[in-house]
Image: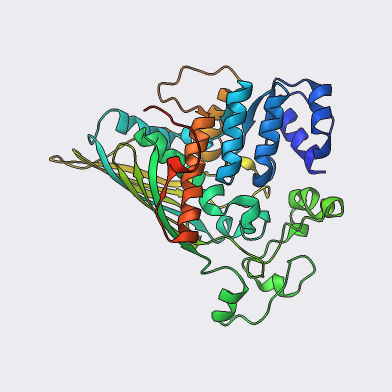
Length: 392
């Protein structure tokens, strides 16, 4: 059911050729029969490497959803496969294409505040979108690598993209402080349920999602449960959650810049604040995004901006606000540009927003290193995680 739905979206909205539905175990057969030039990998995160590697071995280039993979061993296997097969691997980082993020890149490229010395980056996931990661398969860290991999790979990639550098050393803290049964019990909650469907308690829970009330969610998930047993509406205050909801990270980059980063998944609003401190001033960015539930509505609402502001503070001048171009489409208008870059006729791009396996690796390795640091209490050198070097 879910594969047929994806086929419908790709063919109706993006003009791609429809293909027969295959089970994952028939991957080799699909490649043999359909003879695709490019394979799109959008499976559960822990399986990305399997399809990426096998597709390249069978002679296909690959476009993968973020994150490229979830741990250092799988990352190494992908890098080895790219080198062995010579095939192309791209990572679909749509945030690079959002007009406000491109504008930040332009300001830094122009030398607006000189050399970047430090970045303070705060990302907020709210009680609608943020909570959604704790209802789904992402709540098991073995599936997603946690939010520092699954979600923050976007954010770490943006910093690499903005300052044109790569991470060297990562140190992090993280814990499950808000979601999960134990935390709820500590706040005095006494009524619990395992999933929302069929539960009377769920109807009074602001964090519950009701699949039967949404035609799309019902068709995509509830009606398909008999096929694979996947439950889309688990309680965010249930047992079995192994990812963090409160995280702080420090990163040192090859160009000597440092970043302090935080990610919290239970905030009243969604978006981010990022400040750049440079040799000739400061850039302050405030972005508020609309709330959405994955697959629960119009994908054009994903990342839609409610509020945006970029202010430049010159070292010895008056602050001024920077104009940001208004565009149509998801993620502030970035999605149509990404889709054209992937499936249309790419325009010349002075910002070099297309992301290869190298960008995919360095973004995800920041989160992987942060997970290791949380586990060990020690700083982690990124280049110790995999065997490859990139000249900058």
